[in-house]
Length: 618
Image 1 (spheres, helix red, strand yellow):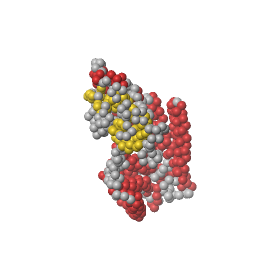
Image 2: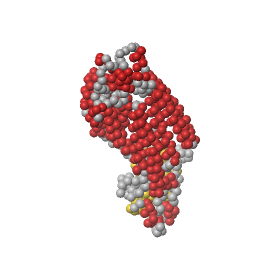
Image 3: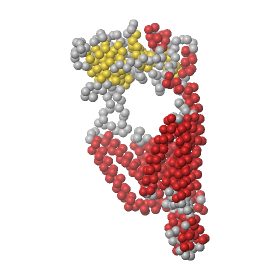
Image 4: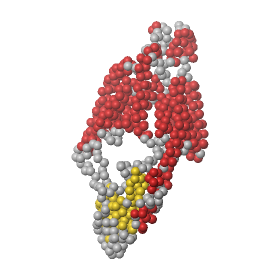
């Protein structure tokens, strides 16, 4: 439990640090050198405060600095040798703790050291990209000489023309097509046709076409129709029967639609899969609709370039493709077609995507590698080294947290430096947090259980922080919130909640039991969702019943555990001590300290209990 001093120290430190971070951010926004200088000063200030509180508190003073004198004044029978033995044992007492403020300042100092160092790679190597070179499987090209002369200038244009109008007037039919929503809110962004037989537009109510939504890029064809790009509505699956995993509803498919105010025809998405039609054009001589589209990004015909389509029959809405697919990269296909002057189209690269070309991507990868390598030596490694040194030399509990952060930062920067980009970092972290979190917790639990004279506070901090990391990593690794299949929840419970509960009982760490309770709460919510999805109706009462029963079961389990917690703790503590690897590797450092107790007349009164605790790891 946190004392009053610890609570106020943490709250006050958070407020002060927020103020300093705001000041540093203000300086960095003006000039990164200013922010860097302020961050360095702040880091030095934290270390100075930590050393001041650490040395002035006297928490590591041995008994001969005050206890020996007191014993002599009392006229006790203990000589200097006896007091020296007791003083050394008190100094090595693993239960002794650093003052909260010193511990907090040391932790903030280690983190600030890494932040200050990270200013350098971020500003010396500002990388705008960093993705792998784009190597498409093929390229879509169009032979412009095969197109009508009226269309060739439009087809070769690299500046797409996009209409932002949400209505169009068909003069021959005196019809206005527009995008709108009705008052009920059930027909949102639908297609409507307003007749204009009598001025001003009082020929009747607008006609609603519910088959398409979000029509845009209207263009008059000259045949009494106007065409547009829209989504064709497909009804979502019925909510009456939904079994996990629930199917994703499909609300629309890309189509080209043409309407004369009375009838609506659309392309068939099962035959023509359109990705994002744009740049509509009407050949006035033939009344044919032409438009461009983006190439597929996946599949056997994925690549770059652009596709050119045409529609001449507005009754059947048959789509004609005028582009061909060629295997090979963008450079190969471009050089093979445009340098010979055979009229094939040059791949269009928008200005904002120029950094994604091969040369730009390679430069971005090199920049990311340099940035990550420098960050290793000025940020990640210093955090790790300083944290380990302060853990060993000053026994600061927060160093267990910053050590893991530093090691994780080292692994992350190494991963980015090798790959040259930060893609797939989510996959890296889900494995890294799960594996290293488990190893970190197991090592610290083993050290806590081996009965060596190791300061307990850093181990306890590390066990709690590592358990939180492992808990988050297992959520990411199992994907319980993404897919939510039953087997994923079983794995999460078996390999995350159960081990955390056992370790929490063995080490008497309430935070680990809180994580288990949170996991059980997630189980309850998911189980209630599964039950309600399997029922045809009345979901709310079902969820209420399931959650109420689950809450009672969790509360009952907590009450039952409290009745036998000490007994369970003793059993688990004994088993953990028995299988401790550290105890087997270093047998000379294990076991209770062999000293004579107060009853033997060698230890001053009050030190006996401290000696007994010094040999206990549980």
